[in-house]
Amino acid sequence: MKLRLPALCLATVLSLSIGVMAQAQNNRAPAMGTRATPIAQIKDWFNKYDAIRRQAQMNPQERAKADAMLARGLSMFMPGQDKQQSAALFQTLQSKNAEADTELKNLPLYPETEQLHRGYHQYFQDTSNLFADYLRVQSNLMTTDPATGKPLMGELLNRKKYLEDLDVSNKNLDSDLRNRFKIPAYKY
Image: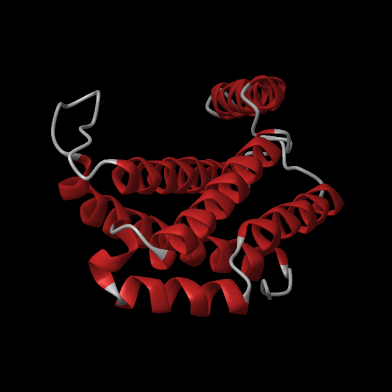
């Protein structure tokens, strides 16, 4: 009988300790922001985010026009019709991406979509800056980056490649989240 009493006391203490620890953990969870966002809010976020992406995205005519201009190479930097057309396109794309960045900032930041939210914020911001720099280079091929002092022309291709990689990463994350929350794929 003497052995049962210590075992019973130990079991009671362990049971109480586990209960206290579980309660403490439950009390901490909301403060740490680990509470799940309701699925309806996540779906609403995706609807708004899709509209922002759609607005910033080149339509098929713009895409064809941009591809044709880029295929002509340096002609978009030389005086003439190509330069004027490419400048107009760059201004449109710069404006669309700047607006998308502003609108994305207005979306709520949920833990579940935070990484995607920040990824597209970076994408829209950097894309807007890239198109603005294309316009600066069109005006002066020797324009330098104020931050580095290096010619902008030499940095444009690397920045474009970085944006392509960021876009792939964002789209992969987008796909994973849509699968996780059973949200239909993005369509233009």
